[in-house]
Amino acid sequence: MSTHFTHDIGAQRIVNVGAAQLGPINRDHSRADVVERLLVLLRRAAERGVDLVVFPELALTTFFPRWFVANIGESDHWYETAMPNEATKPLFDEARRLGIGFCLGYAELTEPDDRGVRHRYNTQILVERDGSIVGKYRKVHIPGHETNEPDRPFQHAERYYFEPSPEGFPVWRAFGGIVGMMICNDRRWPESYREMGLQGVEMILCGYNTPIHYVPDPSQDILQGFHNSLVMQSGAYQNGTWVIGVAKGGVEEGVDSLGQSCIVAPSGQIVAQTITTGDELISVDCDLEWCRRYKETLFDFDRYRRPEVYTRLTNQRGVIEPPRS
Ligand code: CDT
Image (cartoon, rainbow, N blue to C red; front, side, top):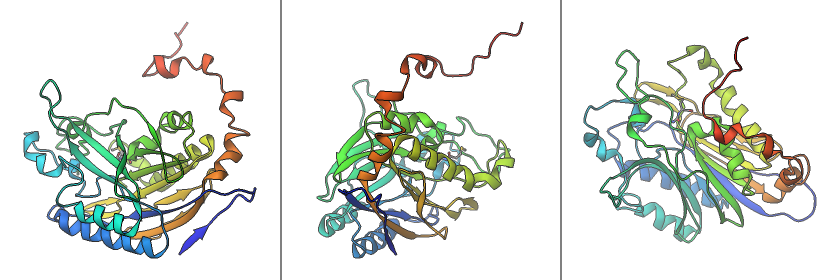
């Protein structure tokens, strides 16, 4: 089902967006197997008149940071060294043929830089309807841990496998609007949304892999769905932007992960949400003009923000409590 939402104030700028949730990808599934699944969702989206399909974080492989390998070079096979490549070319070709854009998350291993260093990033690209890559975003907030923690039921060693991006949160003019990206843990940080909000973002695309069991504090397990919608709804509302959150859900290699992919309007309302934890497409006609209702009223940044008193936001990382007298 495709849903059309409008704010009803005259001119509209509609982008039909599909959130293409994936179910589990096991470690022995090939890139070709996965790309076949992406193609099924892409074609389903095209039948519904979707302009832009959003796939999850690390959409080409299993969530490999759940395993630790002592020699990181042994993990190179999880990373893409070029995009498109042989495995993903059918996706780019079919998207171009259908005239549909997409957003895809994957692990990236770069070419050597001028110091000969190859970098590992958790990356997401934005591909326009002509098959050209218009934007590349690399994850800024890397969660989890750096070293092996053998007492855990599963690892979340993203901080071992990925460098945090130094590039921040750019936005791009694409799909008739201003589009930004973020990846999974980024959605929990208000700074991610505000950095893009200050560039006029109208649609933020976010893929995620969120295990239900949070090892450092299991009391949060039951709240995973609540926190997921809490952060994306507030980020959308406070910046007057659409937010598209897309999961890789279900039980993957024994680890249960959140589904609940959703499309959030600039009002903060969830206008579509998946009902399974498997491969599932939801889509909405998103009116980018709706953003103006919030950007030009309550969240008229230029009129109401007070950056001169927000100095800690960029000068300080951790908490500094007041001295005890
Ligand atoms: N992939 C990712 O960033 N997942 C984190 C899990 C919590 S930290 C172990 C998330 O924020 O959903």
